[in-house]
Length: 415
Image: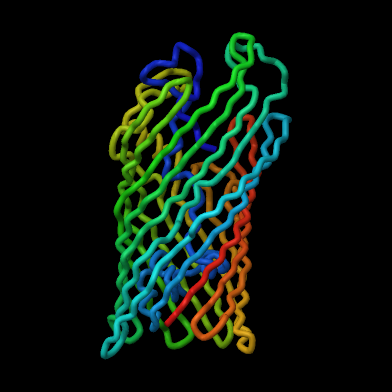
């Protein structure tokens, strides 16, 4: 749940520069990092050592060298987000559905005398910002001058990258690749709050809309050990995002531009394909303490230890160092081919640790993926995956039990 700008309503704080209850959650830690492609997600995200379709442009750019025919691919993602909250002793269930284009692109193999040379162009969605949260306080005390009665927030948006990718075989068993990425995204957060103020019940609606853009690159390598084994590695560079934030609250509005830099991301994967089986495993590493503001954040003041203090780039980056940690994600998956029917069944598991330092294991996101792929004719492949994720969040007297159910359709055409 995102800490909101303009949280305090008291007239004393409704000035040109608003004080806030706490430092805002950095935009780059919001949302769910998933990645593109039905087959990849059906394998639990264990795809760095597989990477043999257009989605390699995200998972491992070197993988597009394996594609020998022109490929056109597109994916549609449908997600259902449910959140069971408990504020003190009051339970509440809310849910929302979101539909997005997950990816769209084309791979162009180039005929060469030996080895392989391929290029690709397209879009991959990587982060989904869609979420929902609500809570109510039914204690009936209302003794303070300001006390929230109920809270409801809806967040929508996504972050993805348009990419231009090239890959080449530098030896019979080694491929190298690079993707140049232009990242674009939008995050819109709407909040409705009912609160007691000086003995009367008031209502307030707030809106924060943030657009993101920035350039980055991903380099990858793929090593083939005979016909049955592959090892992949990918390194995603930091991206300095320009964030443009608009807000409306308490009858006022404002606009702020700032810049944030994402940390490096490293992925390593291995796959085995004996006979009709495919077995894959991945790890991904990211040090969230290296995320930083490259300019002053949108908050100018915050309340820390009961005191209103000025909040600038230096203090924001120190807060990030103290609040976040490095994470190591684990992913495993398997696939089995039924050749007579041209059908592939797959199963995968993923574990994404929470980014916050000191987070409990229950706050880690656990994912299971189920899917199948069917060769509809010699040129068309349909992949379908169902992905279920669950995790918890804790803050003060609020507990959130979150489940995400995603259905992903990918259509690939090779000619």
